[in-house]
Amino acid sequence: MKCNSFKRVKKRSLVLLYLILPNEFNELQKIRLKKLLECIIKMKFYTSFDEKTFFGHTNTIYFLININSKQIASCSEDNTIKIWFKNTRKCIETLHGHTKGVSCLAKLNNNQIISGSWDTSIKIWDCLSSKCVLTLNGHTKGISCLLRINQSFITSGSWDELIKIWGLNSKICLKTLKGHSWYVINLVKINNNQFVSGSWDNSIRIWDFYSRSCVKTVLTKTHFVLCMFKISNNKVATGSSDHSIKIWDLLLSTDIITLCGHLQYVNCIIKINNFNIASGGLDKSIKIWNIVNGNCIKTIFNSHSNSICCLVKINKTQLASGSADNSIRIWNI
Image (tube, rainbow, N blue to C red; front, side, top):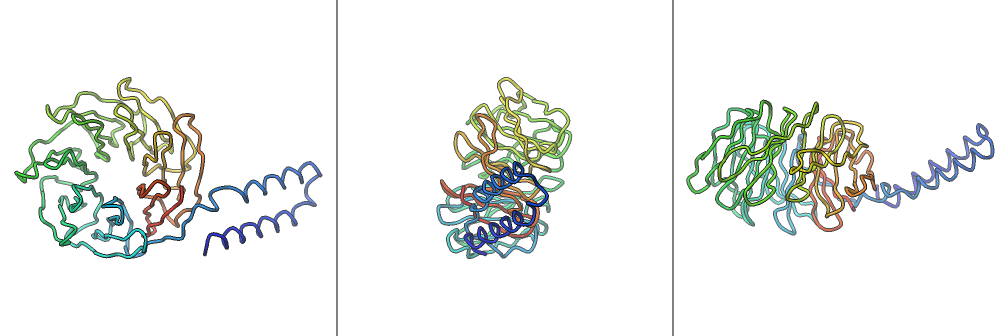
């Protein structure tokens, strides 16, 4: 259904509601109802859908990344990675090689991407030849997150509670970092020397890449960290099992802003600009937030028919979402 048609259907439905209900209200209530309906008709979430839906995966889509200005990559529980043209929504390549669901992706350079899987392996793919050029093994449970440190080093986090640093030239694990007591879910680089990990053990840990040690632990109290994104060198945003988003000052080791509005788990967060972030949740909604005043400035309700698993900003005005309904959608922001 096109966006204008969608708005007309909604408007007709609301007008019909207004015609049916007045007998139940006094004059003041009628005026308030009319104003409410007018506001709803004008709300932005009716005009956010850009009529771009990508179909091709046969199971949950876990992760999305930009390859370049024209292409994105997605990975899925269907064991595959797909490369798409953004504008045409055409899948131009499907990468096969993992034996279980592909849980995470990272861009290595303009021609190569990295994938992690529940089959415990990490693979590096050449996007031009569509071939796997390197497989790394070492984790004992599924890979849940990946991070490019630079062209020569990457890190991985796993359900085995470990973080591993890999040398791509030596093709071996250089160091295994221990500290978390449950699944390592996120890895975020905050500067040239340090990266941050988030875990279901209710903690955020800051690691020094060169000393390969944990330099600080920030406790998130009683709720799982489900997703994390860098806001600035000293600040990260986390999504939680308590349905909230928190902005953390890593120097102060405390949360400074709490954003509330999602009705279920917050699965993914991305930074839009210096003032705004976007989040997606188990409640099927995508929310745009002002992180200066803590306000939600836009909500896209029921953006998919199942939970939102991942988000990626694809240009200055659009983001893409991946869902457990097996589809990818483009949204105007």
